[in-house]
Length: 238
Image 1 (tube, rainbow, N blue to C red):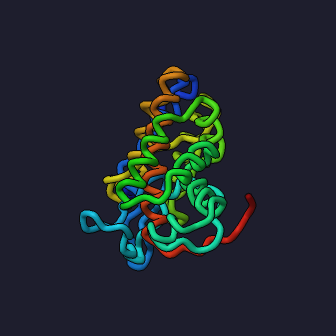
Image 2: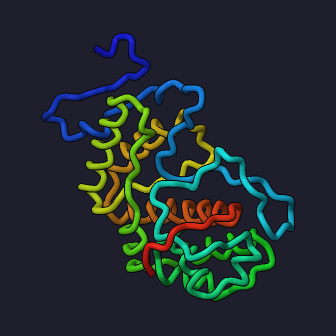
Image 3: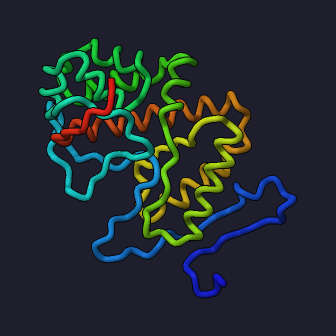
């Protein structure tokens, strides 16, 4: 049934517990005119800035929020670093929580305002990400969710990804997080499936370390994107 399909799906015998991590796809669906590439989980590229600039210029229309799970909505509109520095504590923390849902991480990053440059803010976010306690990491991971591929992806791709995410969540108790910064859109599905397959064999504590690092990279990319756009998200709660 897959003879003329662009997909190559490998299945093993049902008695083999490695069924899900053995699923691989050689391609995502062919690019269709006018249809954006799928955003699965993680990073998209953020726009380039001139060295030393304080505000990030607006990104191209095709740029999307690094979208594994984008967290709670921020309050109001924050325009670049200037708006972030001038915002009230609750508004700044809400924006930060939309990047990484650790209350202590958001409070720590917001408390050190004003930042002289975007690079300084991102460095502070990184530093705070390295210092997440076990409870902080649990809180942040609990807010993440595993995204599905683009709605136009073929059923085989959607089935494979759902099965892989389910296997990971059953093993570790939280969503699979991965940074796809630098990965071309057409290769993201393969990268996610390969990542789940390789990480399913980790011991729980080993996987926590990896997940924490991926979450830190996601938070940085999300924050850079938030600052690059004049966003007006809807208020969904504290």
